[in-house]
Image (tube, rainbow, N blue to C red; front, top):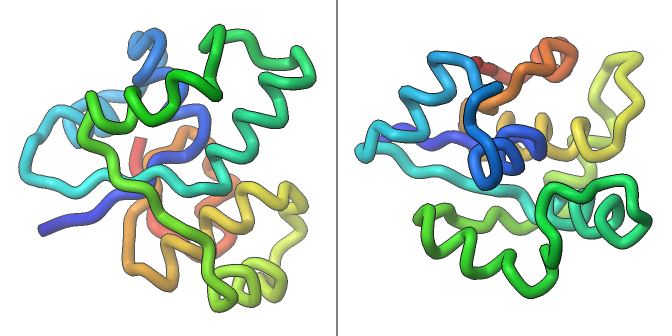
Length: 129
């Protein structure tokens, strides 16, 4: 079974307004015969930005997160020390720590990242949109 890792914006748009999602992203998210994962790095990123007021797409993310994951049958992908090491040593000028961690997880776990951010592909992982 194919496994996909949602980038942070992909999860947010799927949960709130799927209109901006690309055709390949939508096809994958609705395919039914795939495993879909959200990294805890994305959960952390959304929590930080929600708490600071920079992100208002989900009014009470802390309360609603687990229900959103269950309702969409998404699996949580924990961060391991191997993920962190890989993220830290990826060769690229891409500095966003959340993107680096998501790319590293995708590489190690042999997943495709669902993202519109082509800079993530430069980190060495496969992406679709």
